[in-house]
Image (cartoon, rainbow, N blue to C red; front, top):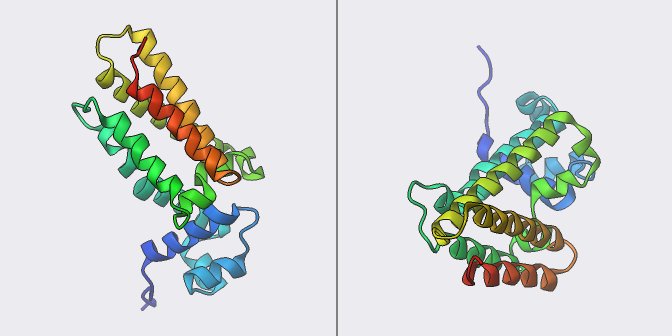
Length: 195
């Protein structure tokens, strides 16, 4: 009879996610992952196959527990006209609070996009899918907010909002004031007319 797993996989993945989010895949050492998760290397490798397997689980956890809940109002049937404002207001709050990992470390996936691991085809695909998911959400929000604007105009506004979002999340690692100012620019766009 095999041994039963003596840990909560979701909690282990969340702990590893924090390490990868703050340090990046390449810089996160196995001893750091052991310390964060409370598991030894052998247990981590048995459960996830490799450091990369643990990273992949952390990325999926990030999408499921961080990204998609924040985007939920923009992905719902019947997106509310104020959904974009709500999204950027929530993001502003997260980036303004130095106690949050978002304020200190920006976005796990965008950090990965700027790191050597982005050379991996599977990682590039996850990052491309993430950007497409952001764009779909912003377009749904733009359609709800500016229903009478031309389709091309709404689409263009959504593209600008994604660009501002990406910039704010990247800046969070190096300049929190400018990161929040970038979100403020997105909010000004959302609060203004589509034209």
